[in-house]
Amino acid sequence: MADEGQRHHYIPVAYLKNWMNAEGKICQYSKPYDERVVAKSKHPSGTGYVRGLYEFSGVEDQQLREALEHEFMRPVDTRAAELLQEMVAGEQTMNSVEKRSSWTTFLLSLMFRMPEDIHFHKERYLRDWFKADPKRRKHYKKLWRPGMPNRVEDVIVRMDPQEIEWRALDALVPLMTNPRIGELMNRMQWGTFTLPFQAPALLTSDRPLILSGGLIDPDSHILLPISPKKFFYAVNDRGVVNFMTTRNPSELAFVINRTVTQQAVSYVFSQWDVHAEFVQRHMGTGQIPSLVERMQNNPAALKGYKRVKRLRKKGLLP
Image 1 (spheres, rainbow, N blue to C red):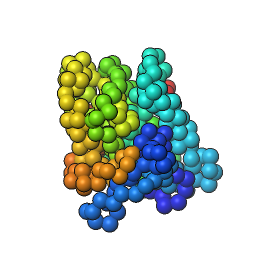
Image 2: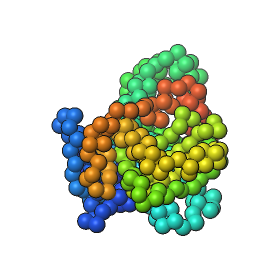
Image 3: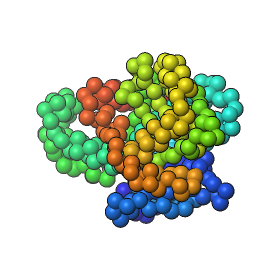
Image 4: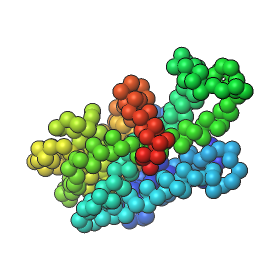
């Protein structure tokens, strides 16, 4: 990942703005030196970013270098910001196919866009690309024509690693627009839940999405804190919502806060610096493999991912 370049926010600024306090700042908790949590007051635009995270490094033309950020990530975040405003304001939202599709893409992006995900994806992509296994040799044999190198290994060795890294970044888009996962999410029942005044304020983090083990079971669910007093939910069974609404609000807030804090890698965010002890106790203690890791280590998921790539190549998917 680049140390220079434009700020690429993996936690969108518009999302973090929902935690701004009266001073126009949020509280960022991190462990910059050791295991001791440090709290800093930050503007939402001053955190949750890595310079050049999504750029095609080595490309001289800035427009092309920033293509993934400008043509995909930024439009996704801009539309999500509009939907977030509606949800936080309590307006009727998600009442059209376009809105649901846009919000689904945003949720999917949160599963794949973090710095650790990008690093893992690039590393795995490069490793697989330069591997000459029997299946690849067989495929190359079918493609071979006079004048081409005799062995696939001879082709691989000539490939520029930077070009393969660019291909890896291109491959992020079909991951973040995965139609199979997107369809499952779109079929779920969506809504928002507002905590009462007396309940503790919600936290968020650089791993803010709370996912159940899968998306097809009756009790499957997705939760996302969207402000200190409100969270978005997607469920398959209305009984899950009934369970949440009848639970003690303070207990519900505690479970959400503990989960997003345990999942955190680098940052936990709050409206005010009143959670240091809680964050110290829980931060990073329950990290789970990201979806990109689980997909690429799961044969069935990987097969589905390859099928998406084939459909895109044929022009059957955007």
